[in-house]
Length: 131
Image 1 (cartoon, helix red, strand yellow):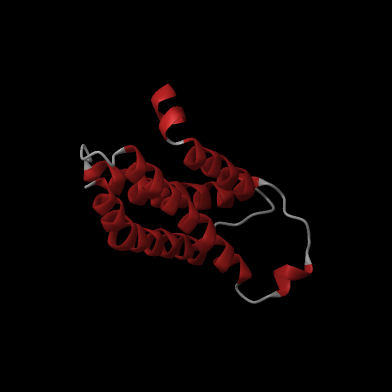
Image 2: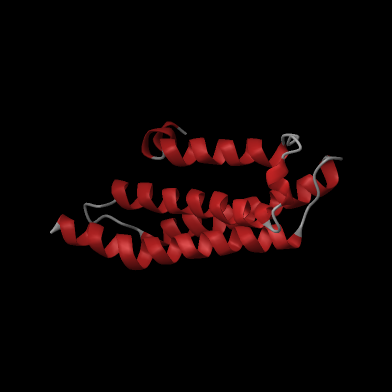
């Protein structure tokens, strides 16, 4: 437990914020009138979460001891599963939120874009600086 708190403090904070935002009762704001704004928010939340998980993983394993499949599980699979579980819990445990498949797809889209950016752009640069 302490290992993860030490190695992934920003990611764990973002996970806590995402969980909180997923279950609190949102105020009625005019911004909600923008079509599909919630999908953009979902995309950004999960893209930011996955991106930070990738960054912290790559930073913590930049000396060459990288076990890359850990990153794929922790930065890709876990956020996707977490988002699906949250959507189901919103549907069945709250009266003011609803589980939405399109929200889930927006979450997956955010994770996918963050993964492509981290793996194809950031990872090679971090590995280059190591040399």
